[in-house]
Length: 397
Image 1: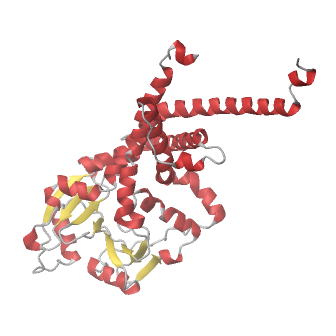
Image 2: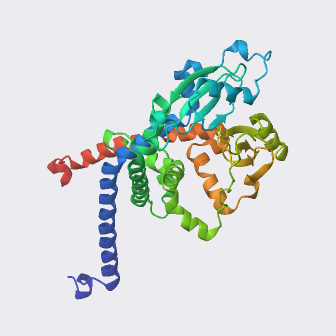
Image 3: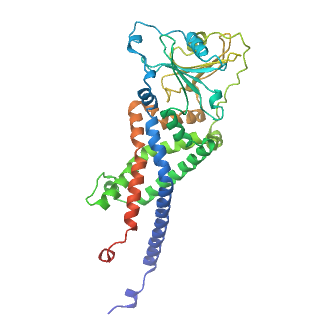
């Protein structure tokens, strides 16, 4: 015989049941959000991640696809010294006499690498925001090896697909919004996975159970949980680089940003050569490694020298900068060792995004992580189809 007290639900049990039902409702909402965003945005995230994996080794792949970018062994065996940069500039202007603007010279990465020169605003690609003429020059002879336009080679086309979706500013906006949606996908996935107290060890254990349904689920969870450490900074840095103006006001509230220098134009006919300008910059930073020499237009201007100092996060695009006028005098400089927090925040975005900041191992890790969104998309779609498939009556019971 049951008493009234046995049958009545206590306030504690009622509160617990209500709390459990609320958690179930929240979980269903989060699951719907995770599923919907995953199906809508997952393809975009997978595309940008896969192209990003290729771009981690952009220079190496481009050299594999373009034999002209490999300097012959007979000219790099130590018997020949590099020609002066002034001769390189002369060769560029002789090969392209109609281009009176400035050139940006990327100095060789290794003994078999050419000098890569960029003419930033060629007439042939005037309608695009970024599509320079790229000219490879033999550093030992000054010979022009190849001339190509940005966007018309496999790797530069891949870069535009990754960064702009081949759609200019509209593509940049779509990618930034997709990056924010991807953060919501990751956050909702973590919420759905979050283990109960005392079950963390089992939840973090990398295991794949038997049975196709469980295997798909386990692969999806493991790829998301373990990949979160790398995917999160990649997505955040991607959004910041796509739309830095969205972030600058918040960063400037915490720390000021050093403004770009106001370099006055230099009259024509007064420029020193590129070698002298580089020597002036290296005299200010004698331990630095030269990476870029920006030569002014024939009408006049200032040299912009970019150097790499030990400890900088980015090697290919370092932030140590020196501006040199036509007489060889330093007009202004930027030293990353004196960065504000705001300067450091933006200075780390690109090296973090491509893994350059921590050497080859980090670049490989970023390249592998670029495969994870495609894996998450495939396993997520398979899991969704599994859940949509009607179960047998016995299983439902």
